[in-house]
Image (cartoon, rainbow, N blue to C red; front, side, top):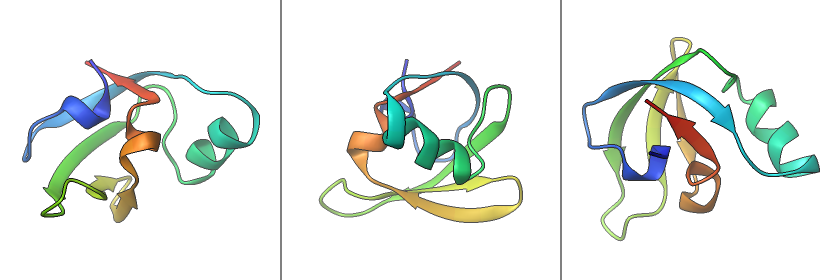
Length: 72
């Protein structure tokens, strides 16, 4: 399952980051790393972006980036 498929209000744990190079580095720089807990707060009306809480702060992610984050 990836972060894009996660339901609103759910808290999940990051299992793996997919993607390569700059994309993966940017996701890691935002604080999303393996083992961290992520809570999905809300999704914009058209589905993009997704607002999540990571390490105590709120973050907006594009759907394309959320698809690269595998969670359980």
